[in-house]
Image (cartoon, rainbow, N blue to C red; front, side, top):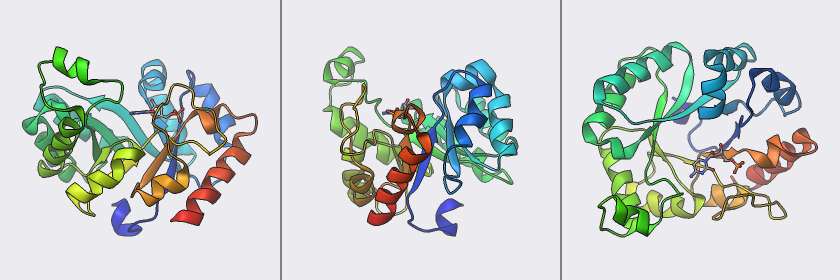
Length: 239
Ligand code: C5P
């Protein structure tokens, strides 16, 4: 378990938001070796599948497989077990899959020799209050996200994916144990892209984030190595 090895030292995960497996090695070779974690999301996984994972494993990197599983409990259970056979270190599910699905994911991981840590997405940050209304959810968006966070943790899930702006509140609600994974990281001078609620690496660490997911500020930088270095240095200065 990551947290047992290294109790509360935040880490950077680089989001490999690239379309092709052939783009992976040239990018990683520019990034400081101390970044161990890389995120494989839907685009890369659908286009390249396990090849992307095998390349990362071959480079001794750790894998965050961000497929946001949301299915019947048995299907999720089998997906978790299969992910463990591919050395996936972190795997996402949707908290809105419900308690039985969440428990199935947690139980499946507990039965694996090399289990992924399971982290749950609460409410997608693309949803607003009117979307919740359309879905038949009447409670306030923030309350909804907090309730789903509580449900996930009570169901045995290891942690949550959340905005750095929600991290401190979730820490307050849920205590020190859950792993918090935060995208939406930008350096003070960085471009926002489509992210609206961003935080600097130092702010994310101060809010209690364990894993800072960084995509475009590194992947699309003219010099990904030096962009990653600046982010690491700011994170180290705060943790
Ligand atoms: O490029 P950027 O740093 O914004 O990338 C962040 C990564 O985290 C992307 O892969 C994006 O899909 C993901 N993500 C996010 N916001 C969420 C959930 C996931 O930015 N709420």
